[in-house]
Amino acid sequence: MGKRSGIIEMANMAGMQSNTPGVTEIFELMKNDHCNTAGSQVVRDLYDKCSSTYEKRSGIIEMANMAGMQSNTPGVTEIFELMKNDHCNTAGSQVVRDLYDKCSSTYEKETADLAFTGPNQTGIILSDHCPDRNISIVDCGAGSGLVGVQLNTLGYRNVVGVDISQKILEIAEQKGVYKNLFCVTVGEERMPFGDNEFDALVCCGCIAPAHISPSCFPEWVRIVRPGGSIVIVLRRCYVELQKDEEEFYSQSLGESFEANIRHLEDSKKWKAISKKIFSGYLTENGHANDGIGMVFEVL
Ligand SMILES: C[S@@+](CC[C@H](N)C(=O)[O-])C[C@H]1O[C@@H](n2cnc3c(N)ncnc32)[C@H](O)[C@@H]1O
Image (tube, rainbow, N blue to C red):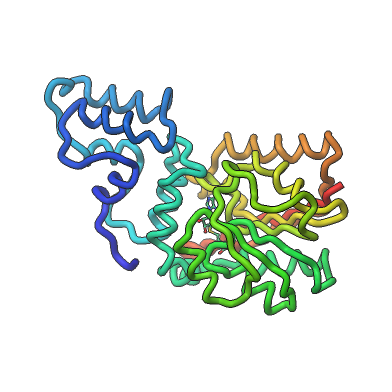
C-alpha cells in the first residue's frame, strides 16, 4: 500500500462522510455505526465538540481526530493508532477488516522493520509442546502467513488458517503452506469447523485491542480435541501495564483476558501449561518490547 491518503479515507472507512457540516456528521455516524459507539466517548466528544457549532460546524477532520485517527500514517502504523485509541471497541468490525485489507501488501515489510519475532516464537513454543509433526493445526488470525511459514519450516504440514481480511489471506495463500484458508471474523462468527477437529490451535499477534477478543476462547476450546494444545502469543503491554508502552495498555482487554482464562480453568475446560515472557516481540526505536507465550491444554 505504501503511502496512503490519510484521514478522509480512514474516516470514510468508518462510515463518515467528508465535507458534511454539523449535525449531519452525527447522522452519518448513526447510519454507519459499524463499531457500535452508543454510549461511548466518541459520542460524548462529538456532542461536546459540536455544541458551540451545533447549527454550523467544521466538518470531518475534527471528527476523525476526535476518534483518535491520525493522518498520513502508512500501513501498520495506522493499526497501532486504532489500537491506542480504540474508544469504540472496533474488534471484529469492518473498520479492522478494511485496515488489514489495505495494509496487506506492506504488512511483512513493516513487521520486518519492527523485527517482529512473534511467528518465530509461536513455532518454537508449539514444537516444544507438540513434537509430532503430523498434528492438525488451525492458525487463528493467520494474516499474511508468517506463522504458517514458520510451522512449515519446522515440518508441520497439516495447517489451516483463518483471518478477518480476505486480502491478507490472499498473500498467505501464495506461501503454499496452508491446506486451506477461511475468511472468518473470530469472536463474532462460529468457526467453520467441527467439535474437536484440531490437535492444536495457534494465535500470534491477534489478542490485542481492536483485534480478536478473548471472549472467543470457548469457541477455540470447542474445535480443539481434549488433550490438544492452544498456543497464544501476544505483545505483553496489551494486557499487562508496561513502562513506556502505557498507551497500548487496555484495561478492559487485560481484564477480559484474565477472566476468560480463569473461567475456562474453573469450568475445567482447559488448564494452563506454561507462560513464557520473552524480550524482543517487537523492537521500536531501539526498545525491545516484551511478548507473552502461553500454552493451554484442552481438557
Ligand atoms: C498483527 S496481525 C498477526 C498476523 C499473523 N498471525 C502474524 O503473526 O503475522 C493480526 C491479524 O489478525 C487479523 N484479525 C483481526 N481481528 C480479527 C478477527 N476478529 N477475526 C479474525 N482475524 C482477525 C488481522 O486481519 C490480521 O491479519
